Length: 207
Image (cartoon, rainbow, N blue to C red; front, side, top):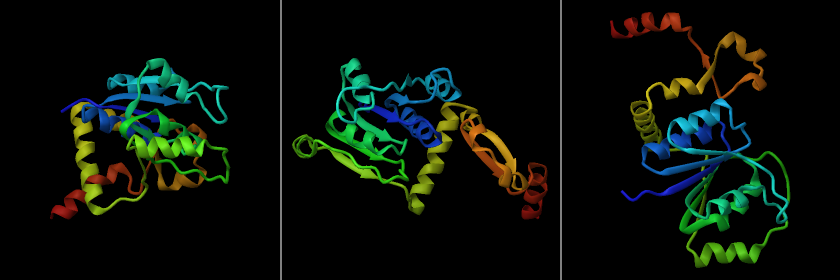
């Protein structure tokens, strides 16, 4: 399979899982995010063979975030860009950064009502003349969930223990009302049933 280049903005759980998926598919992976370069998130990306760059702002252009400057420094465009932060301006900024026939996937959701002054004609030409595709995704079918299970197995096989590393906080159902999201490094997991009872439940099901 020909190796493709993929870049990601945003490094919360969704961005990390997207990067892991593309690494097991053999893609060269680059992640650009505000997470500190010495954070656990960044360490995970480097440990799977991806490249990580901490986001820096840029004063060039009406809404450029620094992503454009970062990719220009590398002297390349990308076959796929995954926008996982939910920061809407990044989605528009990413379109010119795609290779011909490239795909931009918008996976984050913005809660705001912001407005932008966009180079609409340039963006339109980029998409039509260079055959670029923009997709948005949040929901999934039954088949997608089956594929996700397979991908998770592939990730765990290629990077043993990695999925466990993403579960940085484990809570009981009683602790949920007092959850402090600021203290969650990557992903919190809520145990509806205490782990100590899992074995007995499995035994009851098998009886």
